[in-house]
Each structure stands twice: as C-alpha cells, then as structure tokens.
Image (tube, rainbow, N blue to C red; front, top):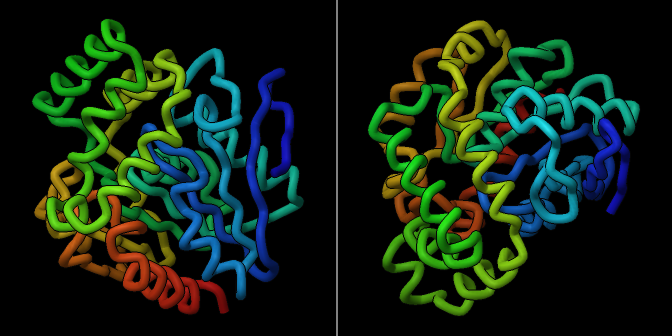
Length: 264
C-alpha cells in the first residue's frame, strides 16, 4: 500500500502490475479489497490502481466529502504516480466519483466505466431512502447498518451458495466509521445529473449492469447505453449489485475486452 497526504489527510492506495494504468474505484461501504478478483487478473497486463477513497479503509475522511473532492483525490494519486492518462472505472458510488473526475479532469481520462452505477441523479424516492439510512446509522452505528443492508446487494442464489463469502465481506467492514457513511450519503444526495459527461466523452464508455440489481435498477442502467457515441455493455444475468463477486469471470472478461479496445 502507498500513502500520500491530501490536505493533511492520509490517502492510501495499492498499485499492482505493469502496463497502461487502470484505476478501479470502490463503492459505498466498501474499500479497495472489493476489487481483489479483478486486480488478480488485470495486473497481468495493466498497472492497476485501487484506492481506499477518503473515509474508507485506511484513508482519512476529508473535511468536506463530495464526489468532486473524491475526484480530486483520484487526481492526486495519478499525479503522485506521474500518470498523464488512465482508464477510470467505478463501482456504484465509485462510478459517481469517476463521473465527477471525468467532468473536472477530462484530459486525464483514457476510458470511463460504470460498474453497477449511473449518471442520473437520485430520485426523490432514493433521496428519502438515503435520509432514512442516515437516521439509522446515527441511531445504530455503521456496523449494524452494513450488516443489515449489505446482503440486499447480492442475489438470493449467491447468498444461498456463498453465505460464508457474504459474512466475510461484511465482517471486513465492521470498523467503518459512521461519520464516513453519513458523509457519503449526503454527497450522493447532492450529486447532480452527469449524463452530459457520457454524452461529451469522445472515447468508448463501459457499462456493466446487474440484471437483478435493486440499488441501480436494470432499466435505468440500460437508459445510459445510448448516451455515448460508443458504449460497451455487459449484462450480468445472475448478478445484483456485486457482480465483481457474483460473476467474477464474466466481469473480468468484460473489463479486459473493454481495456483492449481503449488502450491501443
């Protein structure tokens, strides 16, 4: 793991492999280890960078948490590694950060991917769900929140066959600070519509969509597919919101196929 200082806050990230740089951004209530199966494959051909976003894992929470401030953190990592351009792919909230990065720093983007994520803003219903989540976290803490909500991100079939993996995943996150989760929720509520980022991006965009995803609904994800001039779409038929775990091989194939197209 590498560490740099961002506004006197510790920012931690891992670098594996060699070749063209690929940045994988984890989602809400996750850390860089959610990508371990993808790093194991992609590091054979690429330099894979997986940060703990500010407030997650070993990285300090910033004084002001927003998609834009986390995009600044990603830029700081690239500058620290002396990287001029990278493919940036984000899972869920990490996709929101990737879009903010694309809006602020398009010159740094070689490719852009949304993995179970969206460029649409929250609906009023979604905002209300997040507000209820904030109240639950304030009352019960982060661990109980993660323990209750995380299983909903997997299909019933996956949970049935891999209950040990789900439990291990949850237990790994038990030290999450409630303040970080609350800050993320407020930041997600506040984020704007970023469909223009996809419309204006001149290079191919990657969409990986879970057929059974309830966090980022299938039909909403499909609606993004026509926004870019070129979009690579992979539908994970047997996944909900955690395709990197639920359908690892198909996820890795989608990532590798996309990277081969955008990195030439």
